[in-house]
Length: 156
Image (tube, rainbow, N blue to C red; front, side):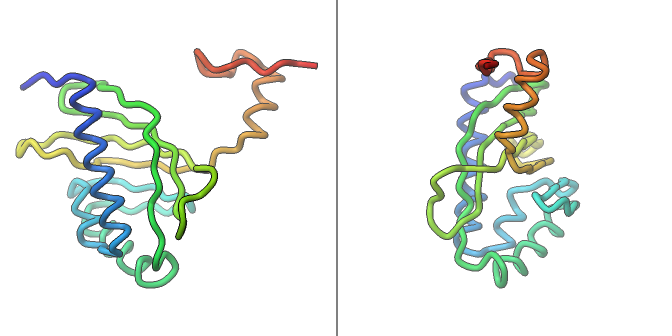
């Protein structure tokens, strides 16, 4: 099995996410689904769980034709790490909107795998709303719950 650097994985993972964004912008469910592995898991912000590239693409086509028509997937990658060979975990801020939003209020964790064909695809994604107020209160009341390296709120 080949070795890949974090920088190389980050570049290649970002390219997969750009393909997702491009497919989303075109309203192309099949192309969006093709960014995922055949057995992928997509947990949406609403909590819906889709399994497999085909199901993800099919469901998103319906969404692109209705509720999500004309929207774009806006993403900002926060970090990438490699927990195992040919596996990358990407954390991103994101939002779905017709125009670029002022703030990317959702968080997503993407697990990508590099298949035998050397193509990176999304094996799992989990999306959630970032609740800054609850997070700040939690960190003030229980400072040890803050992630390592996170700025510590000042208690007044």
